Length: 448
Image 1 (tube, rainbow, N blue to C red):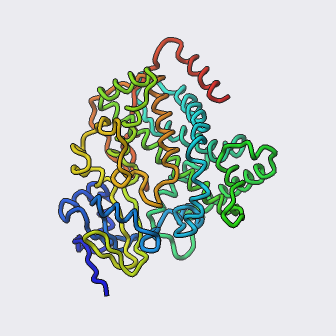
Image 2 (image 1 turned 60 degrees about the vertical axis):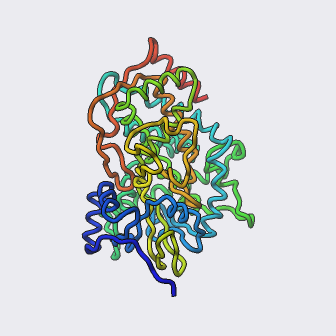
Image 3 (image 1 turned 90 degrees about the vertical axis):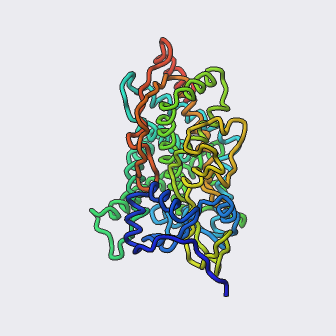
């Protein structure tokens, strides 16, 4: 028999460890690392017994491990996104779905979405107050929601309006329930789970109507939205995706591509206001038509302020050897994104916000992991980075973002994502005379 070898960890009861994890998620991880080293064992509700990794070599080994040895965590976002979402699927079924949905988020199709991003950004920024502090997170949420609705559904009219109203509370509630126990004895309509199920039923009804409209439309072949591509896609055996699969996957794309991107944009505002030299250089680069520093800045925001802290696997084989450790079947393996991003051996002066570290180089995707890694890396990573780039470029071009000497905004948990505690507060001024009319003109051009 293989001898199990686990890293050390706290001996407190699971409930107490769970309370510690909920009340001190990021600081608690750092304290556990300081006490036990770059790997430690925990026992917490929902996840059960788990090993937390932050050693680069062991993380790389985990990401390269095949699904027969370590695959999807049994407790995952599929509980709220549906049994056919990416988060719920494992093994061959996950591979089949991923193969179908990679094309819409890469290559030339990204260029088709850029105009949508710029148009929605200009539309939202036209209402920004000048010279007054305001939280940018709500604005960024509206931008990314409208972008993803148009890119994913091609939605407009009544369905667009209703999804716009329905999805924000749906996503917020779902992200909180994702880490909460599922009730065993039914759900009252007024309970959180009851309200969530009711919103899910309304979402399914809207998607069903959109599928019928798209299926009976005459221009399906000419559409670039993801729904149209899903309806036309086929598995290797020639079969089409079921309407249930489409609904679950669309919801996955909406949630994964909406809140996380918006939160990263709010963090970008928060970081840039506290680093005026970087902000000045970014404005100069944008005015000159460049993008290298802006792309590096986006990478550094994602490194220093990852909005998701953990990516995970579960041991499926009888045992799994990861570097120094041998884990038994059923154990969860949690990779702490914040801890590896803080590693001084990988990122010297890691606590500093320094975009120059990524100028002229690309990060190692086993060490810079805001999108997870391996076969379960976020399928929309390229889309998200395109959106971040276009929104930030538009902001720097259209507005002067005023620096501040205020303290850093605290990390605030929104259930799944970590957002700036004050919502990424900004103070802006429009750039140049006649700017309102210029924005209106560019908005109309981008919408064409």
